[in-house]
Length: 257
Image (cartoon, rainbow, N blue to C red; front, side):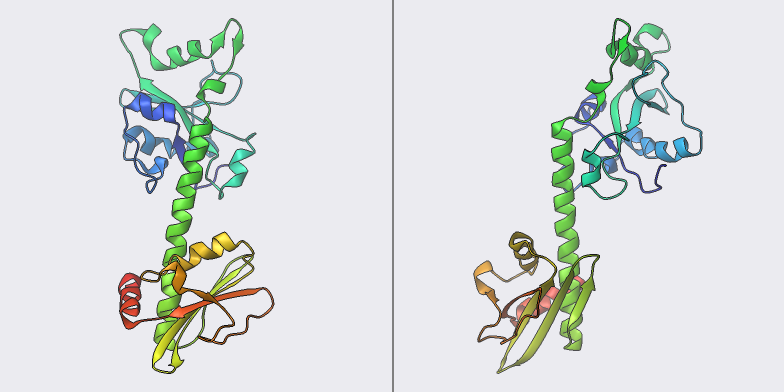
C-alpha cells in the first residue's frame, strides 16, 4: 500500500533524460523542480486509488505512466528490494526509471513504444536497466546523512537554547536513545555546557552531535567526570562538557530563533 509520504526519486538516467543538472546533496532528488518529477510524486496515491495507468508491454514488473504535456516517464515501486528497508518509510521505494517525450507524428519513436523495445530481447522482457544503480543508492545514502546532520544540529541547538533559558536539563526523546543538554554558570565565573547521550554506543555518532555546537572546537570538549563540570554519568550515559562563552551562547540563541 502506498504511503502519502512516499518519495518518487529520479534515477541518474532519468536526470540525463530530462537534461536536469545534478543538485548538491542538500537537495533530495525527488524535490527537484522539474514538472515530470513533481507530477511523478502523485503516482503512489494514484496507484492506491486505482487511477494509475500501467505500461502493459513491460511485463516483468509493474511500471506506471507519468504524463504531463508531451513529456513522459515510467515509475515503479521496489516491493522486492531489500535496499529500500535501509531508509525511513517512504524513502527508496519508488523510482522514475526513464523519461522522454510523446511523438505523435511517429508512433515508433514514441517514448512508451521506445522504452518497451529497449527492454525486449526476443520474447523476453527485462527492465533491470531501468532500476536504480549503485550510484543512485549511494546518492540516496549521502542525502540521508546530510538530512540527519541538519536535523541533529537543529535539535542540539534547540536543547542548548532551552537549557540556557531555564538553567535546567533539556531532553529530546527518541525511540531508542535520548539527547540532553545542560548549561550552567555555577562553576566560578565561567559557564559550561554539557551534552549528554543515552543509548548511543557509537562514538562517531556522539562526535557528530558535539560537532553540531557552533563555535566549539573538537579539542575543547572533555569527557566527564572532569574538573570542569564534575558530572558523574549514569549507567548508559556519555557526557562531554566544555566552557560556554557568552559569544557562543549568543550564536546559539540566534540560530534557534
